[in-house]
Length: 332
Image 1 (cartoon, rainbow, N blue to C red):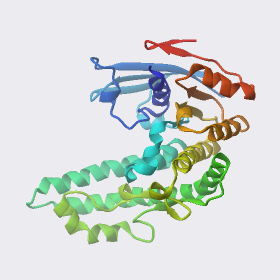
Image 2: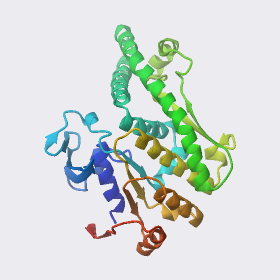
Image 3: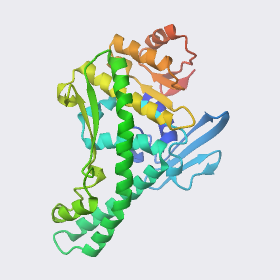
Image 4: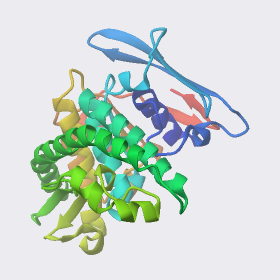
């Protein structure tokens, strides 16, 4: 009990939020209204004490060695991290929002310009949607709508270009990892799809304005972007076997790790939560061989079977520490 919480706490200290896309109100322990998490990170032979103090809906502070970040965005990317969990199957099975978060999570850690543009875009988009809803069938402030539309153009251009460039670099790495993990030859693809490729946002906003006013929400923009996953040129969601699907998701996350690592001055932390139950023995061996024959930095594994993890690691001769969680208490 508590294994996933432990890994998510590490993730929180790196990303200022839970890996599972839930609000801080749901991260807080039952019957409490506040949490504090702290950890020590080593980077370039120097230690950093990172503390998160969070009171949902009221206050969130992230501090390093006693100094509080004035903006949470300044903390993102300082301690890069990638987490792999059984819930990552949502990347293939759920809607486009999950795949956009995958893109954002990757780019936010390696590109401060992208993160700034994304925060700016989301803030303006919220204002635009609020303006559309405020009409409620009556008059709408078109002058304000024009201003907001104009303000969306610059962050949109930055986000679109950086997502496109990232995906071009991401694809060959992803395909390489898929081939290694699956030991299969079937072709896989991952394509960035956006309304903005070959289209001007200003034109699209005008074309869809009447519809936006009617629906009271913004129907065009980078918040509608998606990643299209295919295997053998067919939709992954409909045509992949369970084994192919697991290999595909693992390859996506390891490619994410590779791209983040290539742009950072320190190796990202890799968090692997309870994935051995979801993989057959062949894929487990392929994965471990890959992890321990490449420069993957510090890795955290969790497993429900104490001896299985020791048996899996033993042939590789890796240096490790084992922790047991009993009744919510961590023991070395």
